[in-house]
Length: 292
Image (cartoon, rainbow, N blue to C red; front, side, top):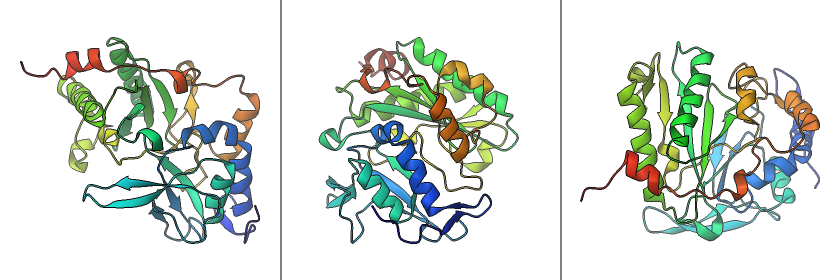
């Protein structure tokens, strides 16, 4: 589709334009689209580029012709329409409207009460070395494996890492939150100098915040291969676990290096993620048993 103002500078520090952003998403579409397709998705819009304030948008804006929507029940009991892209045309249309970041639900439009993955967001506080973040992700992976849960890792394009766990269709939001909360608090209780499960800033200095709150109905997390609206045009990048040790930071990939990575990839770094279905039964028994 036609872009208006394709020459507009979106990332001033590196000179990337609106056309560059559209070309990026077109180039990585085969990897990016599966992570947002058919999911309620919030977009972080910067119509004037990141030098000006941006805003999150989850409801459809006027003038959309290619982007679908889904009607959701909100906490108030009211229903409202949410953005729900289904194809490449929708993504580029949203870029035309200034979207840089894409943040989908962990559930599809056809099964909104059944999350199909968990996200543990490992967010380092001030003073935490990057190597500690890597070791934390590996620890989370190993602890999850002990309750028969395979996990996958990505950079966030920010300071930290996401560890994701594919779920079976039988899982409900209350299960996802109960387990992820118990797991995060278990880590912080066992290693209180390394981890915290609270978002209070004063508690996070020198520790890694294990953010489990993305595993609640209505929460979102950044999609793999999404740009981030930060200096340098960083990208949230899915990795193979064996690649993690060679990753220099949560913002190790930017738009140009993401494009180069795509050209060299042989197979998905998250092979099996989209078809893996893992129940939480054993994990709940170990970390969050019910009384009686």
